[in-house]
Length: 264
Figure (cartoon, rainbow, N blue to C red):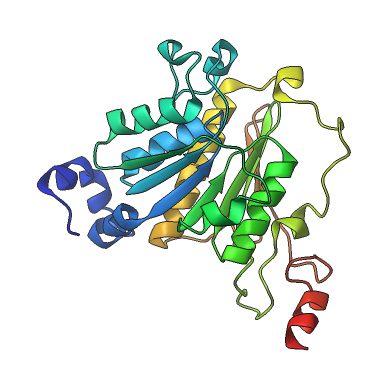
């Protein structure tokens, strides 16, 4: 479906970009993105995806808005306290861009429901705050052959990468999975929760915005993907570093043993 006159005006600054332009904006309009979490990372991520004109944004969260969220979860406001985060986020999407469809999912992602939900979307952006959800989402993306943009927050640091584990890299080897980067979750209690340790609110905005940029790049197809690269942000020193990581042949999803069993 072509852009309407209102959309042409709304996305005018995109349309003049050589690497995006009209074809890229149409890709955004046709895209279906699933956002896991409407919290610190999800809030700016959702806002910028909506502003960019992503056609359909699904939002997964089973929490309600609390006063302590508002220091960083900027998609919600004081009047939203006590309401479902997915409902608050859906209202914000419509308020920001009526051309975007919001699909709220008031639930918690589990290994049992992740694949059914994820297969309905083109790309997944995970801003969850626990390893159980991250593994469930990344495993489901592998089996459903969906690209995944995933980020995490610390007190003053954040990280971001893109997973396309269902594809091979330029060298012919499989792309790394999330389990190649983090083979197993840390012991329970090893990493304090946000409520226990705190988090710099503006850092969530930075990392959520970077997630949105990476999702847009994956949809449109410009620049160098973060597949096999982990972007690390240190807010104390204002440093951005990138480290490379590779496919682990012992990983349980697309490792050598799994490949051999599929060929048998």
